Image (cartoon, one colour):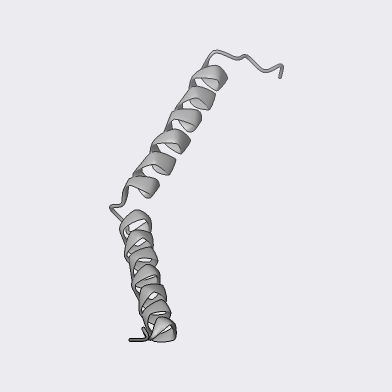
Length: 60
């Protein structure tokens, strides 16, 4: 009884590739957690810069 190791290995790579594709679609989708985290960080940084600029006076 010999196993078809090559066929089993190919099937495992296909399953692994499908899992990676699903994870990428979930994390990079418009409502995904990665996008929300990046947007939250950028919005916080921009808000902080805005507050600093409001409290800064520039010579005329």
